[in-house]
Amino acid sequence: MEQGFFSRKYYCTKNGTNCIAVEVHQIHEDSSDVYFDFKEFKGTPEWNEVETLDADGLILQPGDTNNQMLVNWLTPQKGGYNVQYCRKVDDFYNYTELEMERVEIEGQYCYKARLSNLRAGETYSYRLCNRKNGAHSEVFNFTTAKQGEGVKFLFVGDPQIGAGESVQQDGEAWKRTLEVGKHILPNAEFLISAGDQSDSSKTDIAIEEYYEFRSPDELKNIPVAVNKGNHDTVKEIYEEQFMPPGVWDDANYYFARDGVLFFALNSNSGSYATQIEYLKRRFKIQIRNGLLLLCIIQCLAQDRIQMRKKY
Figure 1 (cartoon, rainbow, N blue to C red):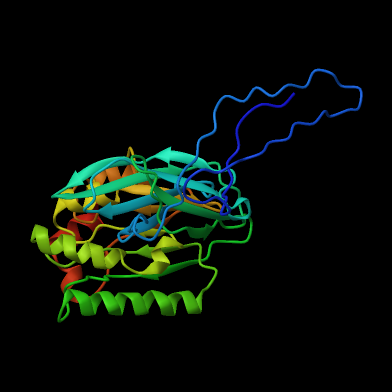
Figure 2 (cartoon, rainbow, N blue to C red; figure 1 turned 180 degrees about the vertical axis):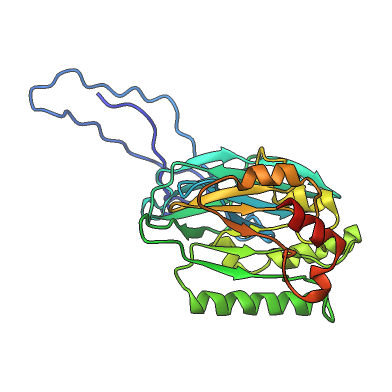
C-alpha cells in the first residue's frame, strides 16, 4: 500500500464545476486488499501576472559552505514569505519550503533564508512565496560549484552607488559591470564586492542606493559576498540587510570554498583582537575595503598605522 500526497499543475480545468476521475489498481493479480481512502482534494489557483510577487531587491549570498546558499530579499512589502527550492530537473514537483526570517529596516523589510543540503555541481531553482495568498515570484536558478576544481570568482571594489551624477546612472553602470564580468568568467561561483556598496550617509538616500546595488539580474543567479566599506556608514541598514542569518559580529563573517577560507572583515571597526582571532586559520583570503599598504596618503593615515601595528 502507498499513501501520501502529490502536487501537479493541471491546465485542463475550467471555471465552474469539473469532474475528476480516479482509478485504483491492484499491484498483483491475486491482491485482495486494495481500497481507496480518499479524504481530501485541495486545489490551488494558478497564479497569474497580477498575483506574481515582485522580486526586485532579491539577491543571493554565499552560505558557510558550498552546500548552502543564502536568499536575501529587500522589499517595501510587509508580510509572511517563504522560499521554495528544488533541483532544476524536478521543476517544483518536489521541493523544499523554508520560512524566511524578517527584519524591519527603516520602513523596508529584509527577508532571509538559508538553503542547505545542496549537491555540488547541481543547478537549483528557487522562488519566493506569499504564505497568505500563495502568490509566487518568477523562478530563478543558480548552480553550485563542483568540488576539487579550484575556486572561480569575480572581484569588484567600491560600486559606490550614488557617488556619480545620479543613483540611476550609477545603477546602470553597475549592471553593465556585472554583464561584462559574467561574459569574462561565465562559470564564476560567486562575486566579491569589497566594500562601499552605497555612498550616502543619509538613511533614505542610502536605501535607494542599496536597491540599485541589488538591481542586476546576475545577483539573483550568482551569490555576492559583500564587505563593509567606509561609505557603508548607516550601520543598521548595512548589517541588518547583509549579515547572514544568526550572525551579528561587527560585520565580520567568513565562508569556505573548496579548501579556501574567505574572511570578510569590517575595516571600520577598531576591534582588532576579534578580527585577529578570525584570521588564525590556515587557508584564507582576506577582503578589506581599506588596505594596510596602499598609497602614501593612506599608508600615513593614523588608522592604517594602527592596523599595521596590530596585524
